[in-house]
Length: 372
Image (cartoon, rainbow, N blue to C red; front, top):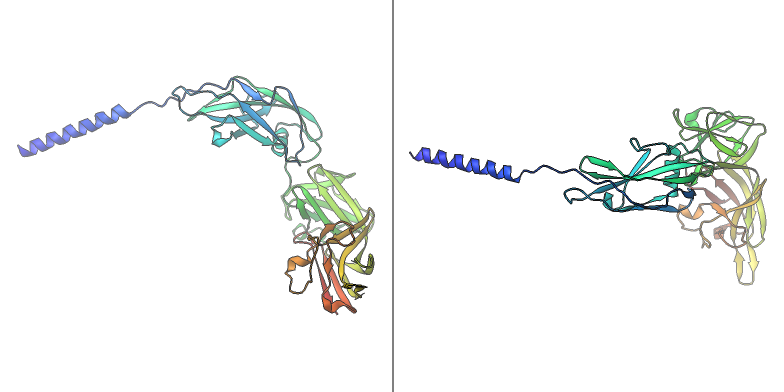
């Protein structure tokens, strides 16, 4: 009898538990209303993109609602002018992880989206946008859409992260694994100081097969495998700006060691290859002022485009003795007689010095001065 009572109680508790579970179970309502009002930007808004700037464009819309009053998530969607958003070229959740009714996109991102929609560089076209509202797995396209009249500048929507130079005209030859790396000065901007000889060169974003190749045609950077021909052997500074698809090549005619107090060069360095200039022995004599002897110096390139000074990232420097390697780093500076200069070690006064300038693309530009 006792076992029967225990069994009856257990069955009663189980039935109550099942009933309780059934009572708490509810069907998820995924119904959500489409976004019906877009605020900014206005329809047919004309936008001239400046991808290299910090400019952005704000998109805003009116909130919609879910049938059960729960949260709605939003995505901004873009499509081609003739598209119906069944397969948008780009989507991005709104601010606040999708909960807010606004989103700002940079001109750089809009340039990429316009490229995805088939609007070519240096041309104009229409980009359609709307807002998708979603609840759980149910996503609803906005009942309205607008268009942007986009004008793209020359340049590449996808900027390469690295750039290499190879080919029969280069110091590295045709072996792509030995290609010369260009220095990345900022997003999409690269440069290299190197010698080129009669032959051909190609640019690539990888020092291996499978990268994107580029070439220069009358100063314009283009994607493709067309090699560039070189007819004379010279030393060059080649600058590439993929933001605006332009290049600039100037001949490096000479490099001098320049002393501030004399306002003149006191010696010349010779190019020895591999983006390096050296001078085995340059006499140094500090300049005598009433207050003492001046020892400041920097470097100057003579180029086909004029003088280009190279000096310290710092406006003013103390003695080099005991300084870290960063003291000797180089960058392009102004022609100011006293600014961005270095100082010789005290032992250099009245002596000869060995000088080396290294402008390789795989490290910081630097120089070294050794007292003979």
